[in-house]
Image (cartoon, rainbow, N blue to C red):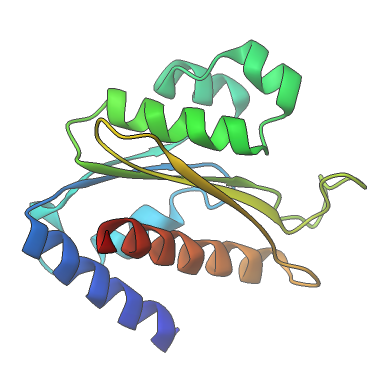
Length: 162
């Protein structure tokens, strides 16, 4: 947990220094990323909003993710994570966005996408999204969600470092 606090502090300072705001689009983390962000004092200056889009319909209605895209690739996929991050920027006034979609378990996995499979996407407004895939093997639901938050913060920090 100390690692998360360090990352959050670094992210807070980075967003403040760049005078940027952030939006989140979350599925498997169910708002945990936004919760961690808003625990930071002064977060109202840089946290614009968070979308919790756990269902496919929520991804479509709140972020504009095409249901045919979800049907073709699955909700847990690189292309859907990228569509989520683009939708988060389109439906907010934020400068930077992150999206996370995955399988936290203990059920819902498959041979192709086992429990612990998580896709992330990160984007700055008016730029192409960057995405990544992580597999958090042999972890329980809580650990997968916490590790996903950690990776989300690392991804945003990497995006802002450029």
